Length: 362
Image (cartoon, rainbow, N blue to C red; front, side):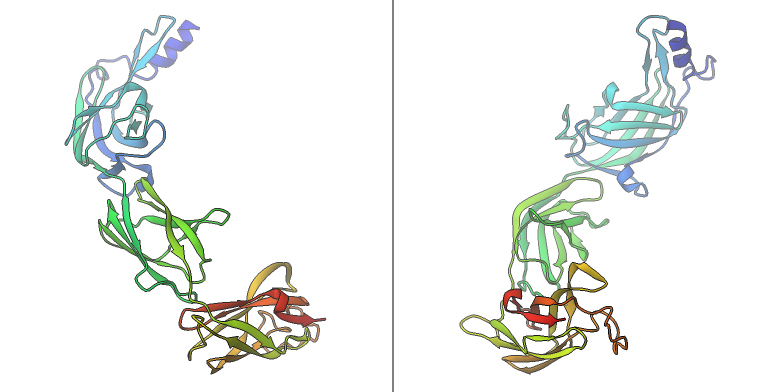
């Protein structure tokens, strides 16, 4: 086996004077998470157990085989060093040769094994071939700290039927690239926050989407270069409530739409209806997808008074455009008894449970 192994190792370099001592060419350093960002940015925390994977781009990266004619052949790779706020040389087992134009390296962090926390700042990267020759690239790497969340504030409270502003304050935010922000609660899918403005490296303004379920959420913020921070039990979402709701009539046939009156009996701290545009939904399945319960909007919703709304339940039309000419109402609501959701323009909402809701009769 010795000769085949030796041949494979020797194929990495040419046996010519032009290869020995060749000076490498270093053109750039890339963080695969942000391939178009130069200089590359990397967080000094987090990452895989071995650190963050980065790519060195250039030419004439030249490994040298060692002990090729022994039982323990090896390859000596070019040395990669960083200089800046601190000096650091990558361990040999954190370097990986792909081809003469590409090497990969795992940069240790505070959380890797072994660990190494580079001070934030700009670094010069150098590559030295085993037989001599060094290439340097100034400001090739920017080391940044992980984000920190100190406070979260919903300055206007939470509104059921509209986005609710949310202010995140801390440090290590990136004004030049948007972070990924998600709300997390056990048993539910993560809720991304899509409208994000990084005001500064200490302040982010975002919004909680309308109708986000009430409850207490963790918030995770991930910067584009990879580092993230999670603040457990960061946010408790509650909405102002309407009073006790009832509906009349409480049923209607499946082959025609039904005009109903929704009554709001408010007492104590409960909210009455306010003038403006209301949203009313029947929580039910339609015939085109009978296994899936969805929020079906009622139409012609009209404010009557602080205690009443008038609306039409689309028993026959469902989500279809009106008028529906097919008497079988193929897109209508599946017969059954269903609850309602009512959203007031004030941001308050109320629910009517299925047990006392509206019945679509066969």
